[in-house]
Image (cartoon, rainbow, N blue to C red; front, side, top):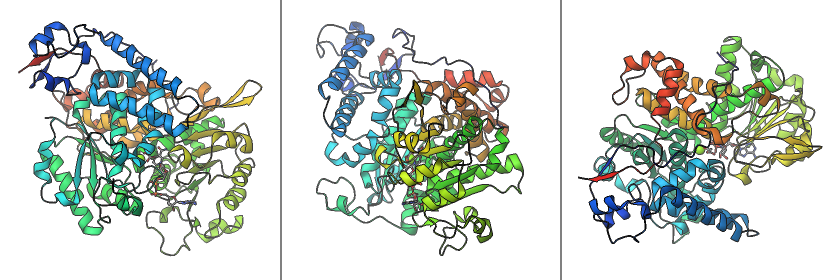
Length: 601
Ligand SMILES: NC(=O)C1=CN([C@@H]2O[C@H](COP(=O)(O)OP(=O)(O)OC[C@H]3O[C@@H](n4cnc5c(N)ncnc54)[C@H](O)[C@@H]3O)[C@@H](O)[C@H]2O)C=CC1
Ligand SMILES: CC(=O)C(=O)O
Ligand SMILES: [Mg+2]
């Protein structure tokens, strides 16, 4: 069950390993300029003379050989000068300029790109991931220079089984798939949503050490209902309304079959699908192959780990989670996923007859059993009349009224609506029944956060525990005190879920595996950190936490008899590994960017 222990010290913390680390030779089927134009193999000026001779590169590069470390420093220098030169310019201009310089490196030399990303993950995650990735998706058609990933459109019906063989890599381990229908809190962005699978897979490479030659970002373009995009002459996607019903599902089915025909053991992460398709596809496929929905399941685990942290921050035993009053704002894929997992945790702690104190609101206010046309997925969390009449609440009550009357321990936003935790709501949280009220403004990107931390600490009090989905700076509370800002983002779990599923060779991803991931994250923080309001590890430790989460998921898959083994490591071997050996096994399987010798075949 839920433990509270500090894990072994980080071994991955901001290590700049020697570029001379020994790496197995890599076979290339190209020569000359073709290699320079292939970011998987390109080393730019870093090709040693022997390799230049071997691969027909002599004369195609300036004569001096530059070391990997020099190339690294040169890139970081240009990045820092860009920061300096763009000082004072609007934030969106600066963010896009930073994204461009990183993207150019990504397009040119993946080894160097992933090395700078891993070593500077805290600075670069906000560029390749939320919030800047949202801006990139919004401007995708204008920013487009060259494709990345694969695009399957409604016009490709009947062709996908052969199209999948157009992907140049022989092996794919990890796929992130979107239909672009709900990109962060930015709505339907159609084909432009491809930026999200790309950003998520960058996090897979950086955090989980998945080999970048084995990842595949995928856009399933079934049209868009975004009128502005349909009218934009530069829009790069299908100019038609979204497919619905069976027509829609037949496209997803065909894609899924094609993927599994070519790579039967690939793990598929569904990302940023609108709620109805997020739930429907999860139900449809989760027992059939190794997939999960990050917004429903990854978010749930991260939120639950944070919620358990807030119980500890109140100085209460974890079992007190069953008594926490939690108001969740947003009844979509993320909000419902969180409540479902929280309900399972309460049932485990207090028994199946437990009566959790959850309150759920959507755009029409408090959801009760009186709601007409209630979403069946929200029904288990809808309040009965007798549960709220004592509080003077009724169907559709507004957020401020609910917070004033419930005095919740936790206010958690997954609504996608920026600023919805306004002054009246935040002041009401000051009257919470908790000694450390918790405010989770989890919507992305930054402008869609339900509130900003400065307002939260100012209006709800300095004792709050605060988390947001996108990164914000800590708040200076004066008198030398700091209001800690946590980043409650599924990035702490999805890389470990995917990696653990992959290395176990799991047939599918069970609730037990997901619970193991959440439990691992929850138990990662020390009491001292929790008391200081720190609920999640620093993103600098993302490889370390991912190794532990991956091992927890792998062990859960083995224990549940879902594992089939991976590569030359069979189930029996996995079964005999201790917890520490499993963590080590996961670490050893993480790819790390170094220039290995290239051999032409
Ligand atoms: N921090 C994290 O790791 C994650 C954050 N998110 C964020 O959560 C947000 C929602 O995502 P989904 O649940 O997938 O979206 P969704 O579209 O499925 O659900 C949004 C929900 O918010 C409700 N809502 C809209 N306006 C509201 C209002 N004024 N008051 C109360 N409720 C309102 C809607 O009725 C709906 O129930 C997005 O901004 C997304 O970026 C999602 C997944 C992970
Ligand atoms: C973080 C994430 O998955 C989202 O905002 O949709
Ligand atoms: Mg998402």
